[in-house]
Amino acid sequence: MLPKDRILQVLHAKNTIPSEGSQVPAALLSGGTWAFRQKGLTLLEVLEKPELGAPVIVEINQLIQSDIVWPGSGYHNLLVHIFGGEIKFRPQGNIDVLQPALAKVSEVDLFDLGQIDKHEWIRAIRAIITQVQLQTGSSVLVGTSSWGPFTLAGQFYGVEKLMRGMYKDKQAIHALMAVMTEICLAYLLPAIDEGADIISVAEPTASGDLVSLRHFEEFVAPYIGQVAQQLRQRGAFSTLHICGNIKDRLYLVPAMHIDLLSLDYKVDLGLAQQVLNGRVAVAGNVNPVLLKDAATDEITQAARQCIRQAGQAANYILMPGCDIPPSVPLGNVQAFLSAGREFVDDVSVQEEQFGISVK
Image (cartoon, rainbow, N blue to C red; front, side, top):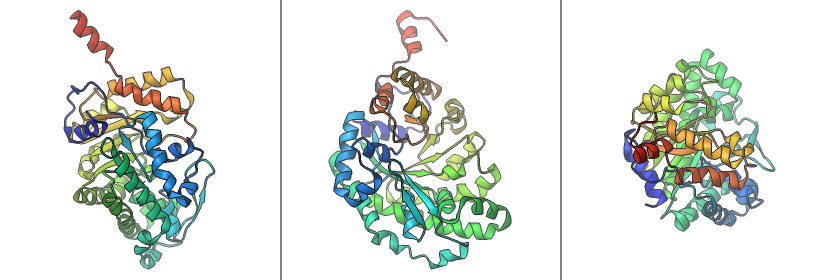
């Protein structure tokens, strides 16, 4: 079975029955910045010479064999720049926002969403997506990623002002969220037309460590749902990643219409499977810092533990618990992804060989 087909099988499974496949699907989450660093390239250098992007992504994935590739990942904050904010490209990392695009919410009325399609950097990213799909899309699933509406709102307006506004001016924040949803879709929907089969929507600002359950239900979940529905209508699958511990809001996830929930390492995979009950596929959740710092044997063991916690289920994909740091060694990524391809449940093997229960 091709890697792409393994992922599609997971996305269609809709149950937590143990998989009958010989391999556990395994993929990175995003990883664009990391992949370019393997060739000494920065995000800015790839934007300035987009012809470099696809060959690097394809070559690096031939080495690590991720079942999903994410061209365009790492560039989420470009949208802030397009609408007047100030950004900074890290020498070896993602893009920081130095100055938000909005001083007050009412300024969103001046936004022209057509600027997104016209910007040369956006056109470059979409060209890379197209080339990756042409070069490797027959065997692996090709995706891309963006901030979700709530995290975009924090980047455009300022996280502290966003948090205060949820208490002091709900109407304004809902107006802001509506525009951020439009911007998110204006960025992502054309990427589907260019070859992205799966879209990762990242909401780190909606973490359970930052946002209460009440505010999540009011200001985050409905807008993620709107994005996911539009992506599905255009023919793409959707992945949602929220940083931090979200165990208290897992029950809200099925109503958001997403296909795959990527879990932070703080969330127990077994609990997530129990709450979601096969209604949404699950991915995760080895600590990315472990991938950077640990020996390969330790990484392999951590990956196997995640597989077991998820029940080696038909609806499970082995992934890191977030995007990986750019400094993660190549060999560590290879060991992590190989843990899925080479997984053998020692308990099951002993029961089959010796006819005894070791649980």
